[in-house]
Length: 79
Image (cartoon, rainbow, N blue to C red; front, side, top):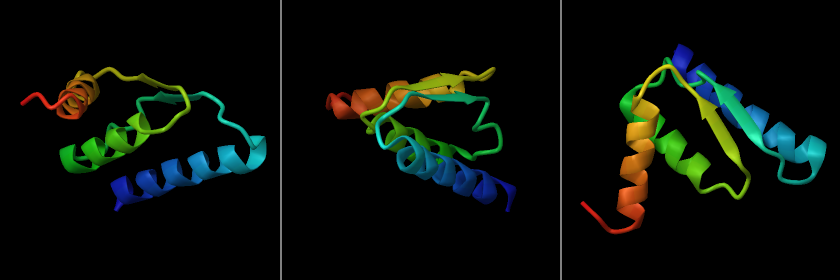
């Protein structure tokens, strides 16, 4: 499916960054998650939030922010 290909593309790009630069460089994503369903998006954003590199996300939707806020609340142990 298209969302699966997009997820694979993101994983490939993140791996390529590590191989090419050999260090943690910032990542800028521009509307990269438009075709993701909620479950895939939450999993991806959780993984990105655990990275030590800086990740900048541009989006025309609020769902990324809402899910990131939810992830942060879970980390802090708040319901």
